Length: 163
Image (cartoon, rainbow, N blue to C red; front, side):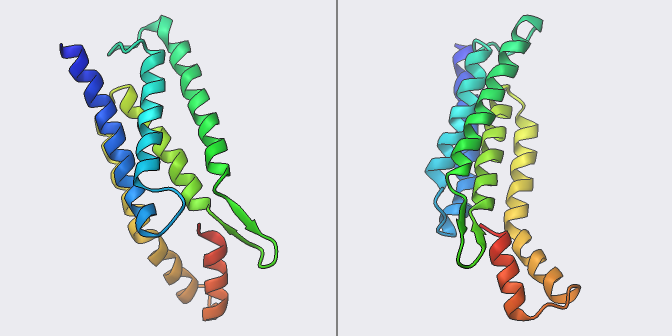
């Protein structure tokens, strides 16, 4: 019974953290959101746990299998993230980079949940949300104060660098 509760906790925490990260994307009207990133984190946790045979501790014989599963998740997520990046030739704008990065980091948090590192997952989630919250304001401030760019030029740069 204890093992089933541990499995449920790992999966549930991964999914909830993915959903929390996805709320930012939802609120900004981006192509990925709460459900998508919840699924990404849940899937990453599942793949990691499956490679561990749902064992709470990893001995030497399982390390290679876990490493290969994690590599597969990261590679597969890279393709998913690439699907949201759009290059607009007419304006030379690249959109979707932050969304792609959020997909990738959500998978990484799911992997960490899969191996049961709760503290690391929660610290990473706090840092991700902090970056989402203050990142854009800091970019605008830097462009305005230290780069001496005009409003139009700042908007063009920020639009190109953002999702």
